[in-house]
Length: 609
Ligand code: F6R
Picture 1 (tube, rainbow, N blue to C red):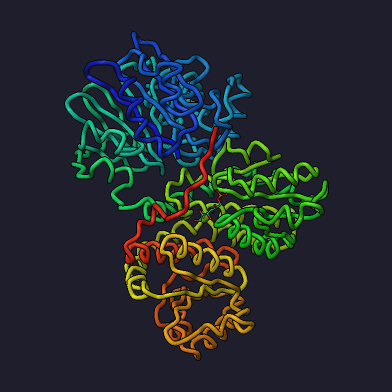
Picture 2 (cartoon, rainbow, N blue to C red; picture 1 turned 60 degrees about the vertical axis):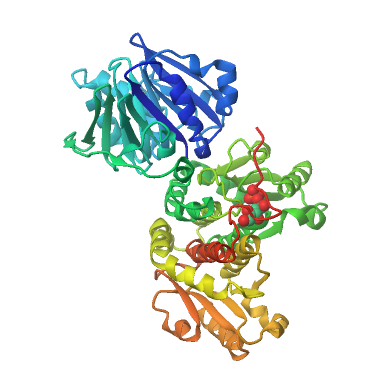
């Protein structure tokens, strides 16, 4: 997730407006910032790593002349957060500049092709292929107009993009395009604007035009023109009036970041599934060679590791040991060695216990691999290989979208490793890969169809003194995570354990009306889970189940149930099954009058760069 902004002004310099508008998009990324303007027919570029204010103080972004320009605030995905990787990116001649939010999946192939015909690349980004491809398209077909060259280029891109492009060949225009990354236009009498999100221009105009996937826009002093990428045919669309305040706009009209981020999951999962194969390949090669693998993390990230231990075991037949970051040194500090591999998982990449586990293992020559949402964090710096989870900045203190992104990368990794090790059939792998691609849609359906029902369940149980969260197999991890969410934001004590453990002690707590949440995918644990539900029910528990649609058997045993779409393979089930529990925690916190974005005594780890 990055932020882009561009504007064509009728009067005055664009750069100060671009800089202040990017500030309002900094919630989308803050690794680096850059601006390109056109002045006297020439392109000027200033960019550097760091936050907008710091970069502006150093290189005076505001001082750039020109009434037309584009800017970018970056959340690193391909390439470290360095100046060289900062947007805008240009072609060989410096006559075309591009800012981009999204992921170009086929950039390696395109880059190879262009390098073979003498294009020189300076960054590690996927974006840089775009200006070079436009340049080459024009070279190959000198009769094409600039917009036709853009069109041909876009047709070769696979993946997601919101783009703003300028060129000294067309010095009065900004060209924008959208495919699966947000892009919106703003207009008023003083100019035309394009941005990743409405808050960028809301203080200057509330008249907006939404761009749809597959559309191009041309901005000039005259206004805006919309076209279809497919055939450059015209699209007519009038502006709408945005009624949001600036504060509402940052949260997209949602009352809290947490609920915004829960709703964002179909999009963040889609982005995560665009993961570069190359990194998965590299990481799985290290895992394949490992003698022992520790999955090290804290809190929610630990729950992702717990789920991953089932994925690696079932798909790749690789035993792994999930360990709490706070316990690793005590538990394994003396025995970890050159033969050990650590896969550390951390949203922030800064959690002290995770980092000290990694440092301890590193001193003993173990191989360090990691998975984090923050490229450039301490964890990425101490890892041999790392993968970014592509979830974009998470502002809610309670981890939601980053958890499902972690799970989806770990599932991809387990599948990759499985392929490498030849442990399950190709048919099975193909089927799981296909199901994984459907998960964003599944999550979308859950949010759309179950939210109201979950709200009612939250209201019904908001005064409960304690909850149980139970699952078997991989759903144990889902149960732990559901319980953590409820405790941390709704302050209701909750207990989670593998359902089979009930009879070894915890069942003695059950009395009439005790709420027990059961996570029940239709997998090999289904029958035994029914047995566990009956045990609880017989002692007066109220069963709240998360089931697959049409699971009549468990439905009939439940006081309340939440349904997720059918046909989710067991190893992938934590991704959709956690979503109702995130919503349950959120609405319980609201019902109790708490602010879910500000759980007491907790703060999010932040990256210090
Ligand atoms: C819970 C939560 C925490 C974090 C934990 C680890 O909602 O956010 O439990 O998961 O503090 O943080 P990271 O993943 O940044 O290492």
